[in-house]
Image 1 (cartoon, rainbow, N blue to C red):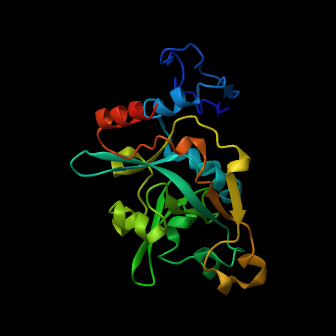
Image 2: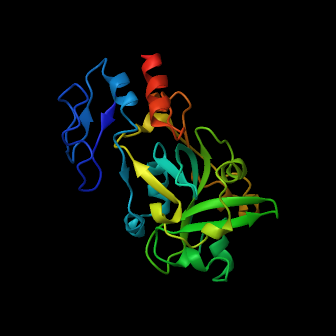
Image 3: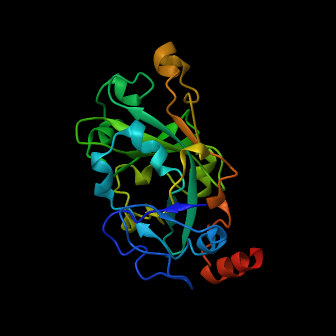
Length: 246
């Protein structure tokens, strides 16, 4: 059984029956009757809502990071072609006291974007090789961000940015469609049982306390929302593939 909800004040579910009258706009979760999960999964591509960048300005990195799991990272290229990828792994970096965070070294030209109001992309080069994609969250002057470590089709932060052609040109840009990189929410709630919290990767330098913080969150590969996945730019192709799985 899957639980849905309609985020923000958008008509995300209103009037979208897809052959059934069980979809509606509500602040409370909508429970799909047994047997209807496949119908919902096939319909995910239609049930999307752009998450506005200002939405992130009031969020706490640690409590917000798991919310990102199951949401769509949408990359739009210069030719207008867009691909949608489900976020499967994230890490939270929270405040000046977090010794694993770049912000703990002080306010610099590199970390300036982390001190701005949430809803911006923080992209930096790691070890001179990999671009790393982070979403700045929280209020202005409180440096916090969520590292997007993996997607359903790109495992690892370096493969992610390489596969989606993400680089430092996006650093400081808003998480909005106009910039070519934004987030979408289709209302599917990920139950806690599908989320695992573990220590962050590669932060031993932060010392035993901060290195052991369970601020890395991963989505179980068996999560029902992964099938059918949507990453192809061709909607008709997606529909044909989804229909073939029913």
